[in-house]
Amino acid sequence: MNKYTLLFIPALFAGQAMAQDKKPDPANDPKTTEVWEPVPKIVTPGKLPQDAPSDAIILFSGRNLDAWHSVKDPSKPAAWTIDDGFFTVKKGTGNIETNKKFTDYQLHLEWKIPENISGEGQARGNSGVFLASTGGGDDGYEIQILDVYNNKTYVNGQTGSIYKQAIPLANANKKPGEWQYYDIIWNAPRFNEDGTVQKPASVTVFLNGVLLQNGFILKGATRYIGAPEYKKHGPSSIKLQDHGDPSPAISYRNIWVREL
Image (cartoon, rainbow, N blue to C red; front, side, top):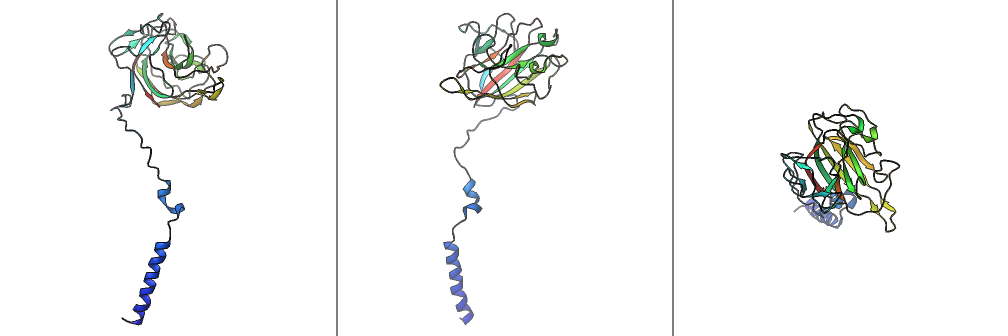
């Protein structure tokens, strides 16, 4: 062993000792920003975007309205007409709403304006989905449904509007006789014990895959006359409207919801 080897060996061990004493710098360690829990639940998606995923609650699958009841008389079942895979508003029987109450959710529903639609303005295929039914009649927070394919009306009352509150970002309506679909994300309002608003409601709405409302923050529940306002409530039913205009009735199908 020569003198150079003798000098090299101590230097080698000194270098190893220094490497062992050196601690990782958290600022340069990617593991410090890795999160491993909680692990998201596994949800099996449908084969198509409109198909219900594995964790969805089916509100209408084409056979019956067992998940719904009359708003006029909650002890009675929904009286709307069931056909081959869809149901149609039975005019004069009133609104219907879900038996189950919800807070925050993702909603999918499909609807069709009849091909032989008549009337104009708000009297042309008028209906609506109330994201939280807060009482009888039309109490709640309404997303409008209407034929506006070739029908002029006030813009905060056309399809995709938060009725009398928010104008939709686009008109993505199909012509009468074609099925259309809503995908809606609803975040219900939260209230303090004294009834004041802790956190207002917000909603995101897609019509036929086109964004119409982008996280809009609601000013309160829908009012036909006057400004919207909040009144304290908890989990609420989803409601569909029997509007009462004289035009032919609209139809619904494939309704499901995922609680968030």
